[in-house]
Length: 255
Image (cartoon, rainbow, N blue to C red; front, side, top):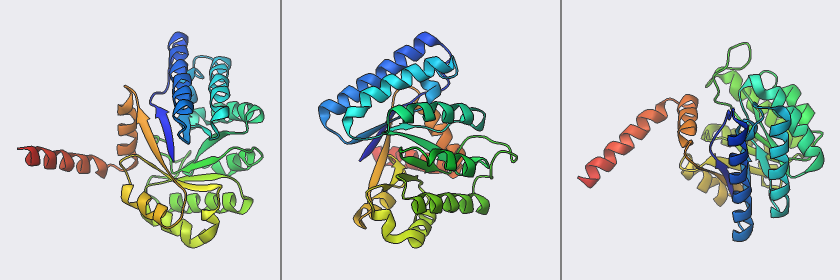
């Protein structure tokens, strides 16, 4: 399975937000023609929510309507904690009209346990991520901290216990194994899956798929791909060294 995202965020021009929305509509049409079971994923700020709340909602409604016949989800991505309230408000409105619309929650944020209870009342899939945005200690657990791992596992436990559709989005093998140890066959149910960014955690994703777990690869396209590179480096800084080493290997190999 795939989750496809046209990269971009924080659009502050209404005309650009309209053009970007049209790209998502074209993407939904292409997925429909291809018959690929793919989720369309995007930031609400990419389609105008920070220009105007109603503009973002109107554009997101169009995308929801276009993706509804595809037989898969439309996933709203997480943004910084300063926008989380707006994201959840718009999600509630959309999910009440389109049950296939899902939401991404960040385990890092201290507010997320309360947010989770709020979204459990809605039918859409919850994508659970650690979270990679720059946040204060007052707003979030620190990256790589044991508190963050504990928060992720606690939220996962609540989701599994509720029988709610969930996508565990993580490249952390130890965390994936902890989830499996805690929940076992419950994670093989149709409503549960593991999701990883294309090119990261490929071996882990293959292993989980081979063990009978539902898996999804997150695919990015578009000119703003660099935003995702920066987010992934922020999430795990040593990836920058890995990328340089891989580039060196290619240069040596081609020479």
